[in-house]
Image 1: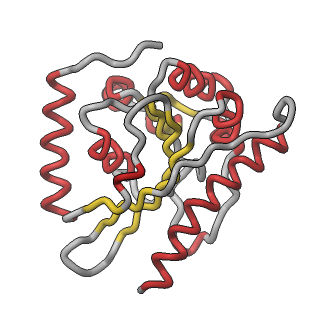
Image 2: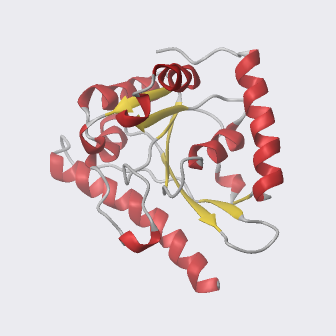
Amino acid sequence: MKKKPFNLFYAIVVLLGEAVWWIWYRFRFKGRKNLPKDGPLLICPNHLKADDPFFLTFAYWPERLCYLAKEELFKKRFVAALLRFVGCYPVRNNGNDTLALMAGVNAVRAGQKVLVFPEGHRVHEDEGDPAPFAGVGYIALKERVPVLPVFIERRKKGFCRIVVHIGEVLRLDCEGKPTREDYAQAAQTIMRAVRSMRDRVLQCE
């Protein structure tokens, strides 16, 4: 799997999208210095809204990301073609689909940055803290790839309605050959880093 070459249509879509989303949300990044520029990376944000991936796309432009997305989004041909064009791979079985996970593994082996939501689906505030899917821990441990925890804060009031909090890079490892329990524990570690940022934000409100 090679890095995606520059594409003019993709560039236009991203730049226009960034302008529109900024006008609408006045979004900003906090901790942008934590964004690794070189090498493979596993980007792990919380997931509240369908447009969450856009903000990390804007943060890393002009580099193109890969995305693991739930299979239901690929049911319509046009949408499926568009998702594949931007670099999405469908995931089945609650985030533990072997083929999709191998697509993520191959992407990081090729030096790409992969965005995956550890929660596997959009989580509303009244749902609490569901357990993350072990698939994200599988990619992190199998390839020993750095992990970037991200918390997307959505505010109901104020000029700036979205703040993307970028945490410090995690480097996960385990002794010996990783087991399923190790993968699940790694996913929990990643999600704890994301939720700790959320908790700090809530304490400051």
